[in-house]
Length: 444
Image (tube, one colour):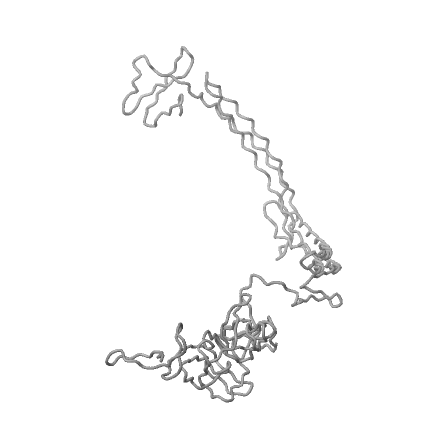
């Protein structure tokens, strides 16, 4: 109970006092743990709620409905019809609302008395069972979707076929006849279920929609005669967002400049270079594009050395073991013929095919000889430039493995030159002290 914004604890004892002079109810508050110290003349009075009005009397119950006339009792059987419940009696009149209680002098208005109880409603007779509804006819098939227009200028999307009409609903089954009224009190046995209505006929299938008109732009192709879509494999400018590129390991395609294909013999990919000058087995060899800056044509299988630069490429010439200069800067073996002033390829690591190796044996080491030729005889002049090994012996079908190693060995008694000196000397041993010797270029 709230008084002037504060709440009286439940532990307080509340007594009522009536200030008859003012005609108002009042409250004197005391605590179970100690009186509220208001002084002898400081009794606090607060407004209280007026007494609830007396509840209104219940309304008179409605008169019970007159019993229905007893129907003739049907023969008892396993499917005898159920008799209907007697006629529903009228609803009882609503009870009068109770009179409102007298309001207190300043208290709120008393609650409205409760409404009188409503008279009982008479029981309603059961409704006969409804026959099941016939199934809906099947939906007509959807028209075929037109071909999707190709990317670019988007072709018009084929019109969607019209939706087939929904089949008509089956006719509703007849409602079972209501059984005759049974005697009041004893219910008759349940009436038999009405017969199920016949299934309605299926709706007709809707017509198929017209086929859409197809358009295609490169690399997609469309054959209007056969209604098929294809791909022009030469029409792609790029492929993006690939997880991987799978090559056909059983391909019968041939090598061509710029073409990448599987090489089943070597178990790797082939990539043919400019003008078909070299076919690179990826991961198994390394080649360098070079320029023939000399006045002599370079033939396939010739050993070459660096002599300069041309257009960002190495400029090369045929190497020779006749002098130190001509045997210096050797980088590899030409893998195609290179005319004077033309570009070609040099293998600096890997296999070179289709060479004449018939004069050597498999496994022979190969060295730089004279005029760019390879030889299996180790040079005796100290200029040891090893180019690789013989892999396959054959005339025009031989294979060599290229891996250049350059090593100069001084041969005692052979000529030598020293920069800044005139003429030449010979390699010779000289004693430094006791058992210490070294090779020198001994000038006369």
